[in-house]
Image (tube, rainbow, N blue to C red; front, side, top):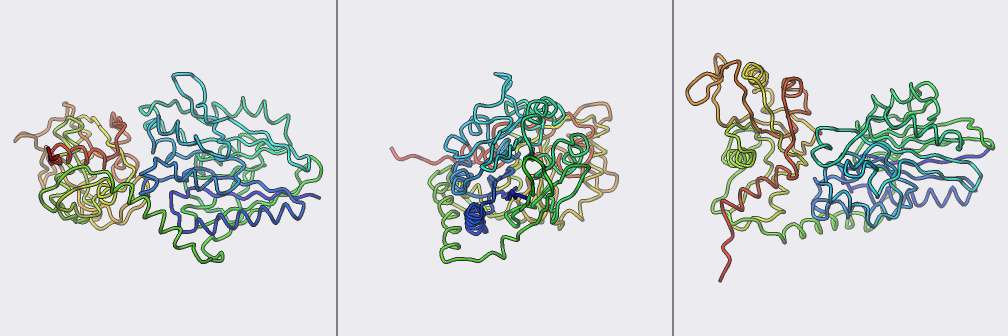
Length: 462
């Protein structure tokens, strides 16, 4: 009986605290297994990048690829943070220096009706033992974000049947690198029995011993580099005999001198690169208050409504994490104040549905002021206080007033907010009834920076 060891990480999200330990562990395990005459494969399942980190922001993710190059990964796939955290040009350049193959079967370029040049739908590997392995990659097809960014995403069921017809007859084992989430992984396990191993990501699920769905073993190693996944595949000739999964807690791995300094250097390098880019000359300090409406939040509403060319806007105070200092404002200031990889969302509702949405907001206003939230693009601590621009809400009746008159049920109203409002579950009317589009290519902090640059320009000496 022979053994294949598969190690995987996913959803690192630029959390580098455990990276030196993870890198050392993977290199040591690869050397150990190869010395023992056992096969080993290493994979990353996407969202290695996250613009919450200043170095990722400053290098458009290329620094993350440099780090991944430190490990001999056999393949990676992309997550939504690579796919929509970059504009199309940035994504097309992201893997220029990658020393590993990118497998991705469900993201097409509509200009060529083909996969991007930096990706391949699957990878075939024949191990030294003779075992033939097929590796397929998928990412979450987030249409609202991918389409305006110049991509054509496909559902799993649109691409998997054709690929499996090509791959399954010629391999002994298929491994799916799946950044589509646990619900879709379960569906794939039920639908495609020729995929024995589905290494999952995107929904940050933790499966300490894996999850069996029909003939498939589903895997998931959480997020932020907390775990390293390990699967041991026992096989005899070309027949798979057994699969066993475990998770290794990265924080428990031995720390060595220099680990902390390496992590701190990554942070410092990113901040220095961003600090070298001046944006504006701000005349007065504006203090952030994550729990209440404040002048910094109001300035943010000025920025987003101006950019979207609509008088109506909604933001929450928890978005603004740091004060806007007096004096020269750099990209590093903007990143510290608004680290969220969020884009603006333009949404049109009928007056009737808009009032329903406002009722949803007002019913939760007090709770949201101190509610801790994570994910869906938000990188702060609490949601904070809702702030409206361009309309007033009667605190007793929740009637919506625009320029002294009540909004009618029949008229449309278009407002701007951040994409986070559509992805969270608190205001379902936005997703269910809204005619929405994301405004590319800028993030919230970029739009805020453009407004500051216009309002408080840096006066150049003649």
